[in-house]
Length: 636
Image (cartoon, rainbow, N blue to C red; front, side, top):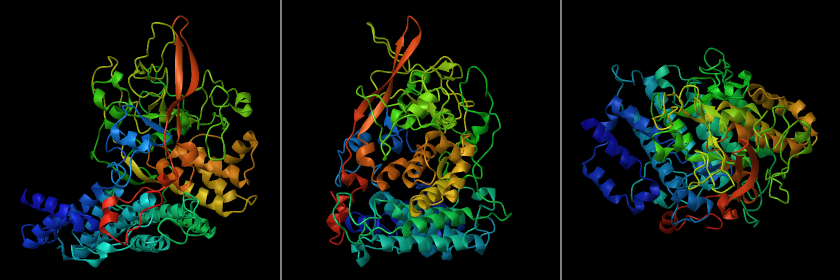
């Protein structure tokens, strides 16, 4: 118990950001320096040293940290109970002085960077202990490179959220001049993170060698971080000579000051480098393609219209150990049903305060093709929907010719739709989703409508195991069953999409795109959808047209990585937020109870605020105030 207290308190010291040290960390640092807290008691004990590193892992971004998921403030999602932090985000009612905790990544990530610096500095002092995890010097050395990889991960995350930041690689105290370091420009950020990733990759195993090491960073993780960073740096937000407001820029923390196509080439090569990683037995990472039927599959009490051949997209989120998940977060450490509790509505379960909190939107649902690969709705080049005089999405003629019926909208859709969304009349354990209302007086609402909450017409199914974890038929009991789901931080499919996007952007319009198509076909095959060439031919597109391929890749990315903390970054790095994030659409379903028929409408649900400054989040005001060399992001 005493050792645990020491570890906890020391970790608090190590977790203060370098900027916080100068403002509010003095008293805690004074305690450490006075001997009240002694870090030697941690790093002189092998088990305590391991626990210190474990605490750094614990603070990796966790998409299920609460029922209100980050994607709920993008056009893919809506938070059903409109809580304060998400309301402030979507209405633009926040700034450098009042960042919601969910958007204040600066403070948390610098806490972890400082902890990594402390571990790297002290781990060599930790003893080898045959009775503990650190049985050999090789394991201790590997742990050091894990910390280097984790430090790169946190810096990469800061780059995505705020752009260039001060690069700190040592543990600072209140008198360190580095407390007043300026922000690194994008070239400096690139050089530092990539060198850290390369160093970690050269010294970490390609794959966990023991089952106890599952969840630890590896060579593959280091190279995946590298791929993600280079894609971010090649994207329109940074790869330009203007800022988000169109002002001319030079090389700085938020702009390269020019456009260079080679940045796309570098990103494509990094994705290829990742895909070349092999495990010790010579096998490689890849998409999870298990098509085994789950229990209850095919029973009338469980609606799932997806094909059996598409089940890999279901199993990848259910089976914790699989070849696709490169890094995941299992906060519960074992079986749980919290994801289901937070996905199905309160009308189906006892835990009403946690239920149905993040809803898919019609914006998201509209992105799914027909089963034959036909894009359904007319969109602009940025992916925003075109609407008719009534505000309804315009259905493409190709979709009409394929048999799509707006009054039977969930029939014959992309298989992944059925693995991602609960929709009206769908059943789970015999409990039918009633997401409708009537128009005649008296107005009646389906049990899942709930007129006092936000409403989109859908509930989230992704990450759920509805054949094993489901509501009871009485609708008031605790959710039945548990699952071993783990939140995916990095998946192989992201690397395929990274390559496809980067290579498409690098190639000239009209150039052969066979290598891009080959990667995308792997994704389409796992989803049991038509291959790329067939899809393009059916839609009247050209596979060598850069813009048409761009739109296709972005849509595939949206579907594959939904609710995995990607959309919020993608719409920003593509600079499409001002056109895609301002209107949230719902599926409004009106029931004629006399004839038991439904009429489906697409309507505006909410208007949101997105301005140019929202492409890059602000640096906390306290950091700018206390560091005269800290420059704020444009617009803040």
